[in-house]
Length: 480
Image (cartoon, rainbow, N blue to C red; front, side):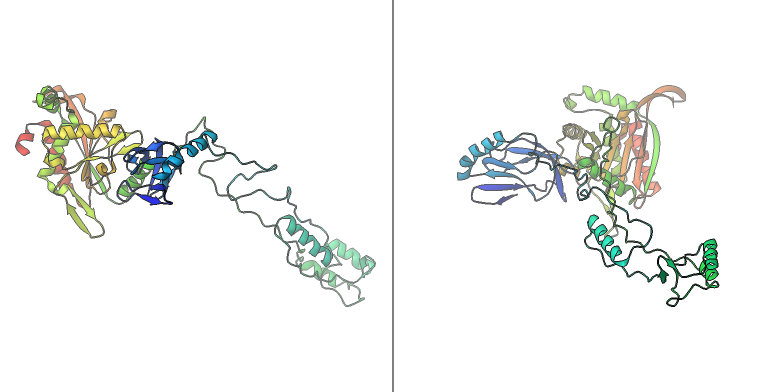
């Protein structure tokens, strides 16, 4: 996917390397500005929600600019690299190399920082004033003084001029600094806590009558007008990583790529498909003997022969005998889709997380062919080179938790599938064989299935058939 920006520069866009993907993370650049590239040369490795993929450039030229550093997640369709092609390639080579030599390799140059306090969160700057004062409480100021005080306070808080304050209520007529009242009235007012200077004003030049004092004491006090409180800035939204994060005690790993997609898929599967899990413990001593015999067979020379190979074949035989297990639930059409092919998924743990590539048309493969496909699948997954196509279209999955020494588990369905088989560790255990207790190779199998389309009878038959083949491998001949 390319775009022409001028006659000599091409922009290479992030392609959709897997069906339905919307973004990818740039893991590693294999080229730098000034490097010469040729058509088909791999310029970077990206990680999608499915796998790590190498991207080749589709033309010859000289790298002019890398638009994103390693570790950046880029949307599909966004230009990631500019390449000078044709007549502009030679002219672009030297200037770009000189620019690279003059530019620090680490990151962008730091801009000079102004003196004083700096914002600590994006979108939340520091206050323009060093302090914020609270309006004083106390005696009421004249109306003009109140308006001036409110205006000054508002400007100090950075909110612009304040609205004019409401005119103060006229005070009671006073002579000098005291309202008119007889000494006994003053004493009564003092005892009752009544301020003769407040309340409804008496007629002009009138004196406070004694009978008005108890009534004033019974009335609720009129609240003193206060200047409007300064607006409080909203609390900043917590960041993804706390500023007080202690790297010596905790490690935070961004959830992205394969792990992010796996988490979303597992949550969706667990809360969409009603899971049922059944278990069976089986004697696999004969299967283990057959594995050792196949390793010595010339037909299997150089192939991956292990218990998982025969377990996979046993599951394929069980699906052939019970084809309805190999299906999916179409919620939109309200239909059960029975598959007449088996794309056998094998769960693989990789440094980037759990992936489930599948062997296409595994039902049609012979045992040696299945061994070759299984070996290739595992090797590719370990190298982190599994393609998105290899992880699409699975119909049923095997997860081998036994390699970690675990007896069994309750696996969650791979989205879009109806069954998944978990294989536990194969251990030497006491077992009743031909009427006697003997040490035998024993393992526990667990089959989880979607109960919307697989009932208990069907699930039980499939699990029982797998166990029967592993207990008597010769059934591979009669049942296959």
